[in-house]
Structures are given as structure tokens and as C-alpha cells.
Length: 552
Ligand code: G6Q
Image (tube, rainbow, N blue to C red; front, side, top):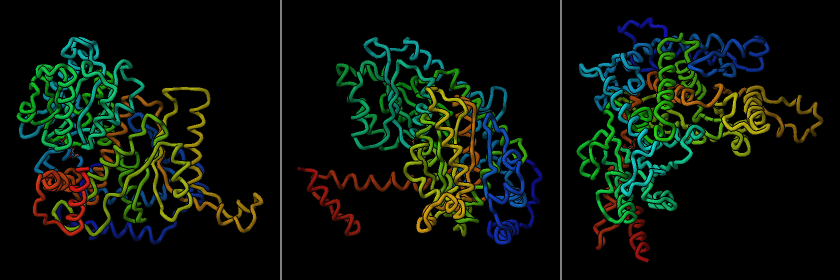
């Protein structure tokens, strides 16, 4: 990004008091944004407004913007000092102010030799030391040198974690399933609902099963309960000798004390650091299950993809900088057009879990109502993120995208070559992807509908207003590198939006609340004698009803 930093003087800090903000709103009021007209006026728009980024082709031509809009967005980005804020993150400054932490997921993919200093210490050698330990362990399990307690090869890996310790690895293991070791099965158990664990373990042989207890804090109720139940299941199935735990349980955590207390040998713990947020952690040891699935070499390619996008983000000029531009466009729709949601539509079955992953990344990061200074924001922040893989969504919610009353900006994510080529499937898939972006952008006018001979009474029903914006992200093939770059693109895009909105994208007090509340009620549900209930009348009555029915 261009680094002409604004003078730190005198600018009002609140977003809505900035002249650049008012100018952007005024630009919207005084301009029209009609995709039919814009493409007609500039036939080469689709080529000009597209560029490569770390192996991805980013087509942003079908957005409701003119060149003037982009100038306004760039000016705003500079006014909020986006280049300076990015530099601060990459330099390890404590930008997570409410937790007083650096935010350094970018250090996880820094090559050997690059220095990233936190509290006077270069963290990159440690990052590589853990990666190397993970790689050595993964090789041993994959080759069969590491066995279960009875000497049998590990064929099942069950990751026990939740939130950031689940969604990233679960999404990535599925996304890169094509490259996964075929002789091994990977399961992810997150829900405290015992059904999740029961279903995941039902057809597994404990002698051949390895559990990864994945928890940054190692205090998360759901994960520890699942881990204890998994330990019981293992011991019941392997003869009850507690020494089996050492061969069947490893941990990924920052909390060595609790790991040991659980009974896992610290030699079998893979660490990370408080400067890696849960939802940003799949490139750390949290990705151990992914490394077991695809092997260390491919995991390094995955990290190289992240790194390529990191460098692109740091270096590309605004108009060709995917995270910066798409982040500002997200602000444009959220705040200027008032769009409450955005859809993410991967046209690849392997990316089926990507929208769920992105929901956490985006909504946990930017679902904030106060600025970094603790002042209530006077502008909308993070949108609701949702989506499903194409073409399934087309037979469901696309109706609303085309003809509903909400404007929903969409990201289409696709690949030119399928990993599982089969007859005409991929051409059909891609035809649908491209056709949808075209139909959303250009619609079908009432006159075009009439010209098809449609009776007048149906013309309104069959008219598509168009002018519905989308980005198309196209890569050659779904490789570990492409996936890493895609994740980093969204990580940085989320960061960019947070910078504009002035919020801390790296804390999650709303999540912490849930962790505290449930503890109190759990005791009230299981107490032998009904305790004095001091909730509201609804909650009290529900607790009483539950206590009666659970005995049946
Ligand atoms: C992620 C959040 C949250 C977290 C889980 C699990 O950014 O902080 O989703 O990852 O609550 O926490 P532990 O890894 O500590 O178990």
C-alpha cells in the first residue's frame, strides 16, 4: 500500500466526523451506480478492474463503484492510516489493546531469517521450532512409526476443540481433502452436546485413534469435557491402563500447566503464543490435524500461500491490493448502502465449510459496538456473513439475492480446474458461477421480459433488477497455497474493515460472556435439591421444567 501517512495532528478521530467520510457519503448521494451503464460506457471495465493477487484473480468490476468512488475509498483508507496500522500489526505492536497483546498471526508464516520482534525477542525461530516438532510428529504418525499403546498404527485422528481451535482445522482438512492421507480418517468434535462425540467415535477403534486436545487456554469447558469423555472411552476400549494416554493424546495449547494436569506429557504438547488469536490460528500448531492429513511439505506450501498474500497486502497499491480494496468495498456496502449481510459462495464442494469458518473470522472480529477507546460507535460495524457452496444455494436462497428487497454483496470463489474432474461437471459448475454473477449484475429488464412474449401480468414477477454487486475470486486449482492465500486475503480484509470502523478486531468479550454464564446454571441443573433460583421468571421456570423432565 502507498505509505503517505496522514499528519497525526488535528484530524477528528471519530469516523463520522472525518471529512473523508462525509465526502464519501456525499459522493454516494450525488452519483449513480448503474452496472449496465458503467459497462456500456467502458467495454473493457471487466479487464481493467481485475488483477492478480498471490495466485488469485480478483475481479471487482461488478461492483457499484466508479473511479471517483475508488479515490474516495483510498482517501479514507489513508485518513484512518491503514498503511500505518498494517505496519504496526506486522511489526508486533500491541494493537489488541483490550487484552494488551500483539497480533502476530503473520509471524506464523514468516520465512526463516525474517525478524519479528515481540518484547525484544525475535519470535520467528520459535515459530519454526514448533513447526519442525509438529512436522516430525506428523511424519512419525503418517509413516506408522508412532503407534497406539498396543503397537497398532494410528488410523483415526480426532481433534477436540471449539471455535478457533476447531473451525480453522476442520475447514482446512475438508478443503484439502484431495491431498489427505487416504488411510486415515479425520474427525472434529466441538459441541459439548455428547452426541457430537458419540457419533464421531461410534465406528472408531480406540487402539488406532489419536486425540488432539486443541485449546489455547486449556480451560474451555466444552473441550475439556469432551477430552475427559474421550479419555474414558479410550481407557474403556484399551484395557484401562492409564499409560495408554501418552500414546493416544497430544495437546495443542499455550497452557503447559493445565495440559500436564490433564495427564498429557508436555513432550506431547505443541505450543503457540498469546499473540495468535484463536480464529487466526490454523497456521500454528492448531493446524496439527491438517499437517497430519496433508503432510508437512504441503503444510509449508499452505503457509507460503498465506505469506504470498501478506506480501501482496503490504506492497500492492490500493487499486490492486485485494485485502485493502475489498475491505473498503465492504465498508462501502455496509455503511453507505446499509447492507446488513454479505454472502460468500464457494463454487467448490471442498470449500463447503469455508462460509462457517469465515463467519467466525469476520463476525467475531468486527461484531463490535464500541471503538478501541470504548466509545459507542455511531456507524454500523461487521455485517452478518453467510453462504453455502454453489450450486446448492442457487436452488435455495439465490431467489432473495436476485429479487429480494435487500442488497447482498456476494463473493464468488471458484477454480479453473477441478481436483476431481469428471465429465462435464466442472464446466457446468463454472457456467453456473459465471452466469450468476452476470445475472446479479445485469438482471433482466421488463422490456426484455416482454420481448420474450411473457404475459403482462407476469412481467413484474419475471423482471430482475440487477445492479447487485459481486466479487469473483478465481484461482487455477484448489491447492494448499491457494487456500492459505485465500484465508490471508480474508484475514486482512477483516483487519482493514476494523481499522476503518476504529474497533478492536482481535478481542472477543461476547464469547467470554458465554463461558461464564453457563457455569452458574450448570450447577443449578445438576444439584440434587433445587437451589434457590434467582434468574428472571422465564429462566427459573425453564430450569425447573428441565430438572423435572431430565429424571424421566
Ligand atoms: C477465537 C475465540 C474463540 C476460541 C474458543 C476456544 O478467536 O477466542 O473461538 O478459539 O473459545 O478457546 P480455546 O482454544 O482457549 O479452547
